[in-house]
Length: 310
Image (cartoon, rainbow, N blue to C red; front, side):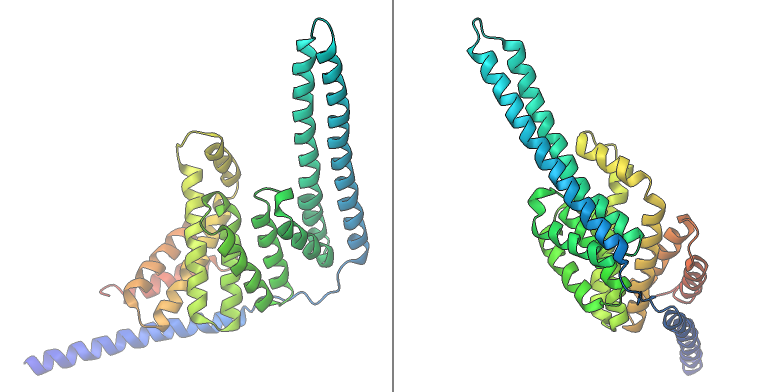
């Protein structure tokens, strides 16, 4: 009797393993059939030139704005200070004008980097996009908190051109610089998700899981900031920025969890695979429509059914 029971359990486990293997096989086939598209088109020469012109013009405007603010406000301030009696109202106004001039100059400099990158990437001018992203990363003191955004844009541009190794190197350096900074979750999440896809294409299973975990960590922080009741300007900024991205963040979380689940299945870590499939299914259900949504939900549910007792 005991032998029969063991035999029955053995057959059930074999059937379950075959079922999981079949679903996993379908996942692998679909992954192979959905290779990342590679942009082999040359950079848009017209927008490369326009991008550099826009970048240079905005930088010059920023420098002139700062110079004018310093020259005008300092002269008027000294005049008011040397007057008898001292014109305190003008002194205060010139101080505020100087501060406003610096804020305006900084806004022009930021627009020179971010605005140019966004326009050039939209019109396929990847040479200018990548060059200006490189400058923003190198001179990040000019665009405080903008270095991570530039790294994200550069990683995505390199991946779109099939330069996976180069994109992974950029992502690794940025993670070392900003990985511990919660304020950068908005930029690090998409960057890590992109790096995870690059590692997957390169066939680095272990590193795929590492980058997916980083993406999940950063994207989850972003969701928490969007839904938190914390006070303060940084918390408010995080909520206002994240609000319009919540759907896409959940979509990326679904993809990252599903990719991790497949890695765990390949390594026979069924407990973690089960947790990842559940998270993938939950986030996919809450996400807006995207091409892999139905596949992720269907295959996650199938695997969860087979991993019920894992």
